[in-house]
Image (cartoon, rainbow, N blue to C red; front, side):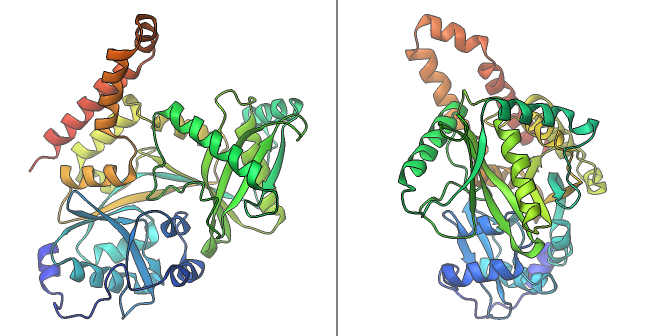
Length: 396
């Protein structure tokens, strides 16, 4: 079906070149008008390509990986025009394989109308700020953590990276971020996860937690991305010191919710919990892929532990877990999965194996023993087993 749909597209449609169809200012204006996905504002960051059609007001952000065009989230346009924008994008690609990562339910039909299939890949934690409360037994753990941080003198501030005298705070945020990334053995992910972007103006808001009754060091911070079309914010970049005061991130999160609610915002998102709570009926069409995703969720700990991430977000008791999808054409394959993982940069097989080899070869005996006492070798083996399973289960 997808090949028939593609062959029916006109080949002479005058499509704007992907990287010259709009300016950064124009794309930001479109996000302000149509940005309904929590990640819409993140599309303005990083090394992305942009497609724009002369027939539709909007754009598609994407990257090319492993010869696959990977679309980031939803098209930024009026939902009623999304199918046409996707159609024109496919025409410009002239048969290249395509997938779209982290699509919301509102845009599924637009992709299906263009020959895409879809599979659920996780759920996003969304909060109704008018209903969020710290009261009740369900919030006991969060309440205890925030009280602990307050007793330790942690106070939350909003930071303007462009304010006079902001350089010292900016430098401290960079230092914390480097420490956090080093601890994770990772780098800035990009694609649908933003970075610090302290030198870029935009709608981001920066909240920091200082100890010492607000006079001490920064313990952690959260960068929030605006979700214009939903009158809300997405808690995107979350970083803390390795020895941060316990309860710092819980206090930051709940204080952000409180302040946004007081300002009249309606929604907050803690973002996608990948591979969590997979329950969509579409999964029945892909039993092997579904089994593989569930295996990864339960057993594979990479840079980010999917199960731990889900549990952390769950303890705040989101008012809604919204499904997110991977849309693809012509079919689900190892190539599409690899391309998606590569642009998301959730983990790097080469980097992981290189890191394991360097530690094994150059660390002292005591360091090697301590390293083995952790579970990184186990994680690497699990990761490799999972990738081999993907190739076997999804091969043509």
